[in-house]
Structure formats: C-alpha cells, structure tokens
Image (cartoon, rainbow, N blue to C red; front, side, top):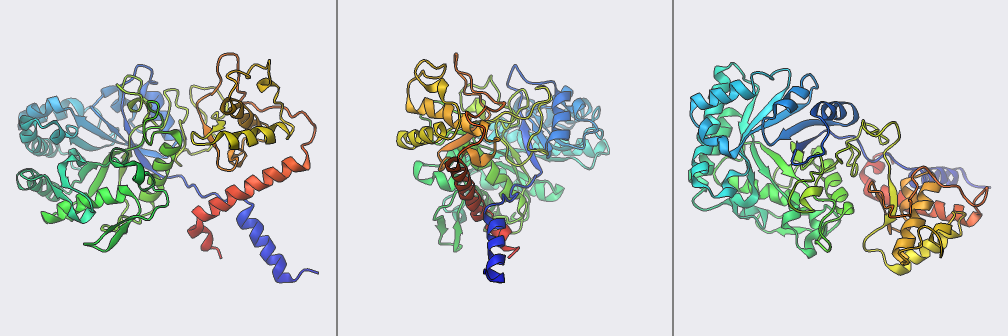
Length: 488
C-alpha cells in the first residue's frame, strides 16, 4: 500500500510536470506602426483590432498621419507622433512650431491621446550638422508651442541610435561620442530633466551580435559578460546596451533622466544564410524582451525599473528594401500574427479580415534539424495512424523527394491530427510552429485537422505523445521555475 506522502508526491509531480502551466501572461507593450507598404488595412480597422484583440496600449508613428490619428480617437491607446527630419528646421522657431501644433495636434488631441512628439528619427546618425544643430531648438520650440496652447500632458523627445556612443563594452565604459557629449547631449539631457521628458534610444541587439554571442542577444542561457568595473554580470545584450547609455548619461551627471526604448526588434525572415534571422529567433527575442521589461527587474545598473518600449514593428512592410527589413512585423497585413509574444488577448484571436476561423499554424522542421532526426519523425508519424499517403511515391506531396520536405508534411499532419497542441510539434525539439502556410504546388498542408487511419491510436502513439508532453512540460517548468517554486 502506498504511503500517504508518496501519493502526495505523485499528485504534485503530475501537477508540476504533466499539466501545462500558463507561464505566458498578457503584457502591455508599445509598437512602431510603420506604413511603408501597399497592402495594409485601413487605420480604423487597425485601431479596433489593437484595442479589442491585443494588449498593445501604445503606438509610435514615423509621421503625424491624420488618418491614423483620427482612427485612434477614443481608443485609450497612447500615440507618439514624429516631426520628420525634413521638417526640423521649420519648427526650430516658435511660429513654425505653433503652426505644426495647430495642424497636427490640436485637431486630434485629447480625443486621441498623444503622449510624445519626437523630433526627427535618429538625427545624429545622419551626420547632417544643420539638422543636428536645429534638433534641440525644435524640441524647445515645440514644447513652448504646446504650453501656449495650454497642452501640458504631451512630452517632447528625439530618438537616438546607439551610434551616439563611442564606447559601450563593457557597459560601465559607455560614453557619448567625443565632441557631442558636452555640446549636444548635455543640453538635450538638461532639456529632458527640466521638462521631465524621457531620453529615447533605439537599442538593437540584432545589429550588435556576433555568431558566438547570439544566445546572449536572444536572452537564451549563456555564461554572460562580466563588467569588472561594476562587478555586474550581464546575461543579455539588451540590458548591456541600456546600461551603456545609462553610464554615458551618468558621466554627464544626468543619470536621473528617464530612458524610453523607442525601437527594438528582430526579423522573422531574411535572405538565405543571413546570420541569426529566423522565425524562432524573432519569437525568442521579442517574447523574452516583453517578459523581461514587464517584470520590473530592470537592468544591473538600473534595478527595479520597468522600461517603456516600442517593438519594431506592428506589420511586415512589403515596400522596405530588403527581405529582413520587410519581416520585422508582429502581424501580417491581414492582421493574423506572424507569431505571438504574449500580447494577444485570446490565444485563438481571430483576424478581423479572416472570417471567423482561429489563427492558422502549421508544424515544420527547425532549420537546424538533421536528416536523421527528421527521418525518425517520419517513421514515428507514419506508424501512429496518420495517413502518410501524400508523401509516398505518386502522392501529391512526394516531390520534392527529400527527407526535410517529407518530414515537414508528416510533422504537420501529426500536429493537426492530434489537436494542434504546442507539444505535438516538439518532436525532440526539432519542430517549430509557423503561421506561414508551407503548402506548395499540388501539395496542400491541411489546417482543419486530419483523419487517422485507425479509430484509435495505438499504445505506442499515446506513449510518445505523453513523452513529448512530459518533455515540453518539464522545459516549461524549468523556464518558469520561479513561478512554480513560489507554490512549493
């Protein structure tokens, strides 16, 4: 007879390891709403989608598009508008700033909640001395114009790339570029301190990683980078980049100014063999980023802080010049998610333009999965009761006749047939979910589920399903250890 404490242990074991834990919370987040595309939905539809289907509560525009500003009226979503680089000289004087406010702010605010006006976009990166010289005067003029219009709840800033730093590794060495520190950044930071507005930066670990630091950039487990000056160990590049900016600000004695992340992100697709670019890495970076900044943990030099961030970007934009630039979006133009980073109000959120069906996902092999592992997946799936006829000779999905192509169809068939649970696409960590339909030519990858060849699946199939579920749940427990340990 089992002892009582043995039964208790068994129950706890089952709860902790075999029952999925909801470790992904719904986080508030900001996004950059770019429109360099010819296939985007109307702004009114976007506004309604963000309000009803996501937890996105802030957007940042790269202009002051009146259609978008009008569409976001009465949504409760905060909006950041941008004065284009070419407009900076005109608004550097008060009359020009007043005219800009009258045209771009007064017709919409406060029905549309405009939180920030940002002057230009990474102006210092242009190396245009004329624009750089007029940036702070434009910020001051716009702030004065807002005050004259009795608007006190809109702040003024300007976003900077990390090219403003001459040194950033390790973070304690962070300093602004020589010649710009006292002449440019000290006055800008003084403006921010006086007006209680944030210093806005655009950190992109995607542009800073090397092959050996990819895990460090993606928030994956790694040994970290030790800063001997502060004694801090950094386990992700995002924190290191923010702390480098903080160190540069501290050198000028402006460490009290708030930092806002105006842009950051990771592309989900790119040119063939482009280092680090994949759907899996985009999910990893953005999902971990969202959880990290919402945790309130802060950075080693700025502990216990929750940073306001804006992910780049809301949509994939098809008119951008390169493949990777066209694939930074969290959503496709039809508003189905490229992937979810924990911002959907409902995991099965419906696309407003896609009828009433759930978001479609298919299971495909990871890019680094070996042919040996994929052949094992084929053998298992085809012995589990799933119809593998389409990948047999003469079948509609036989060509291309490769292990990877056949495994792709088989793994998806298994995922669809057994209920479309995430753990049904694990396959010993060789499978990944995608919202891109892998169907090709006459080969159709069904989404609505597949019939099994047998009424019931054999014990071997059920055992394998339990095995995969156990492995995924164990990984989930490991990743969410702090949450689970709080219940022990």
